[in-house]
Image (cartoon, rainbow, N blue to C red; front, side):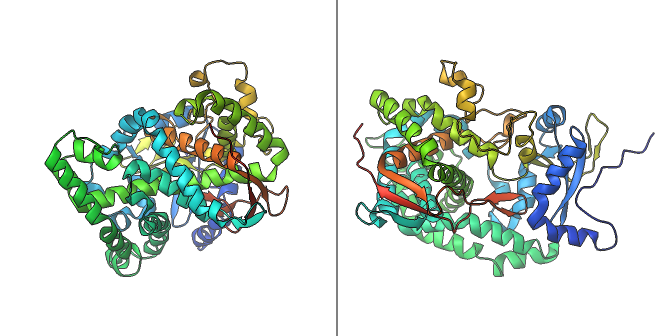
Length: 482
């Protein structure tokens, strides 16, 4: 039998310290290495060094489809996430947790969006009032950094659906959940520096995770126990029964899933998945809207006004906002969440159709950023065009059948992944971001502190985030009532 073909290496030199140097340099240049590999080895497999791990990268519809279709016991999304986040030491007893929450997001949450929308809008109004409006000076321009307040708005809005009132407005609860993602990522990077036998001790004594769980337990236990008491007392149905994620778990979960510590850790992990990806994506979009007000703000305001005048603040209205949808999809194309998506860990040896052999224990991912910057797929890919997809869809009448909706996935649009592991919460996130943007357009004038300048992205390994120090200028508008 012929030897398997050698997998090309991109970005690492040669010599005894090449791996270590590559790992150090990956913080600045991983996306560039992946882009270089994509151009040189398109539709095949190459590898780059990401911190301590070699990562295999695939591109092109054929190999991405094979990555998508591979069974979970062969190429595992869950185990790849665990490896990346050192989940055994940062995410609690995640291995014993069922995927109940994933099923609820895919089914109950997505189906309930229309009915939940009034309470979502109520929370968006209250959260923006607290986090931004009350910090503005009269009707004058006020300069402020927005990443943190927007994260809190997203947290409150999401938790109106996750746990409801009053907990979603508890300031300490919001602080814990906004910090939790940072705590997990920082802790994972600390733990990665140590050999396997030291990791349990490092996770327990050298990271903020134990304190985070202790604080969450202190803030959440009484609220959850009272909800459980009401459920036990009243049964499946009672007047004013909450319609939120916590209640759905209490109604559908197994006895061990309804234990208070298990509910606390599941809700923390749900927030981990929901808050920062949405807040960072929204911030990227907002920076473009604020940097080019003449191009985007009036056009979007006009669309928002026309749609809200007919449909009010409803989920149906969000679906009608085609320019808004295009802007948010272009943000996901232009920035996305990083250089890679669809990361899998090989649980056993696997061979792609081109003959590339993946050994057990290797990480494999799709070159999402490079795909999104491929000029043969997206003309002028280095240019941000917020109405790119609106122009492509303009002649089509049915919003739900548009091929380039924000929530649509394909082998050419990989921010949400594709296939059975595509982000199940993307429908919720799309409605949340549209509602937030519509609120800001109707309540504030906006521009960047440095007019016309979109703040530069910041890269950490394969992940991209907006510049947290960038400052916007906001001024109150007289909002119309719809």
